[in-house]
Image (cartoon, rainbow, N blue to C red; front, side, top):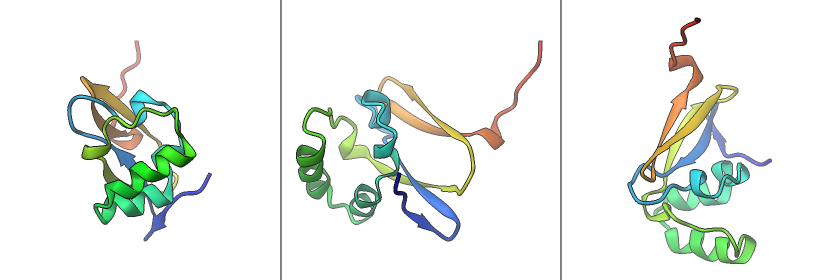
Length: 101
């Protein structure tokens, strides 16, 4: 799986806006890291993302595209993407507090 890496961090795509999530509505992991999409999002070229998705993933719902953001995560850091009412948030494992019963 290709990833965009800069300064020891990986570009992870997350859609924080309410309504529809990016990853949480299609669950295709490679689209969380897609380097082309990440670069277009950084340049606010969402029309290129939509055209790319229509060609490469025609059956995938592109909800959350208009709110898509790049979040930089250290290489090797474990994370998850949570969703509430379409709003996605990135949670780093290192920032979680776990309790044991």
